[in-house]
Image (spheres, one colour):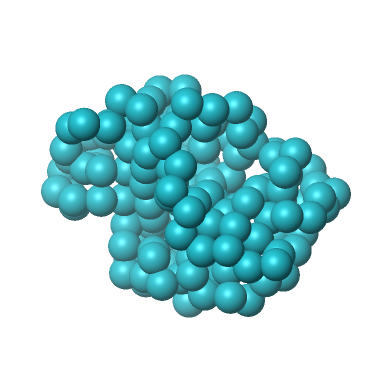
Length: 165
């Protein structure tokens, strides 16, 4: 089975985006994201896909959308549901995939308990935004500090159902 790892950044109140972009700019944090996800399978929603720079997508991404025409934007594999995603991920036989957002896809994966680990950057400052994630999903997850700066802290969170496996 493929290990699915979430990776996102959030303000203390759960804001993850504004106008299909990040409402903050921390180049070192973006570099951390790129380093971890470089040449990995990435899973995302349509809005995240449309706003992602081509340089980020080195492998063909898996995109949740009902609109198959988005393939015309950039190469991608379109899935319409968790079932079609699981079928596809089994067919490509990858060891791990990164769920990179947005909010609806993160919630879908978390509600279906598909994420074993989550790399969460906690931005220290609050920003205005129009996309948010319910951080209470992580209340019982084991938390390990990876990096801390004056602007953000990066944690590796482990799903309690994965501990001891």
